[in-house]
Image 1: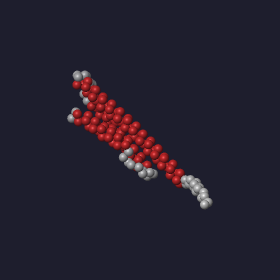
Image 2: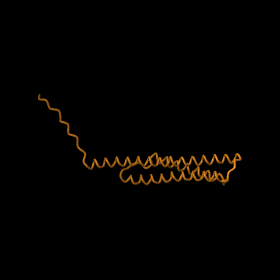
Image 3: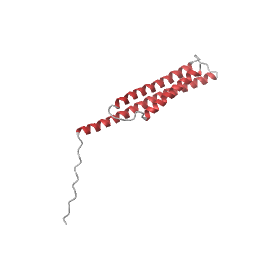
Image 4: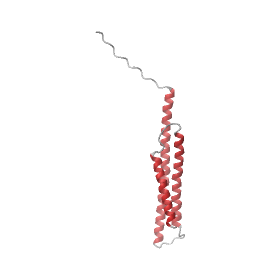
Length: 141
């Protein structure tokens, strides 16, 4: 009985130029998405620093005033706390809005979920900043 030679493996199919271009585009979208995530987290970090610093200043000055310390302006603690807390909250909101528009633009090139973890964190931090701001406002009403 004659032996049958083993089949010759087919040469791997080379990708077409359209397939290569699509692969590069997908990778570019992924890199842009990761860069947008990093930018949003930088906005959150900066805003959170301002919020926490504003709230800390507010509490420290309020503590000095309660111990009988002299302040040139009775509302100084409230004003400084409101300014920094409000500025930090606005910074997070601006970063979140910018991120949202960036994601909407990227979704035209590639499908991915809109509720990225960094976006969720930014929304939570925006709400926390708003609550601290309102806490300072209503403390003195």
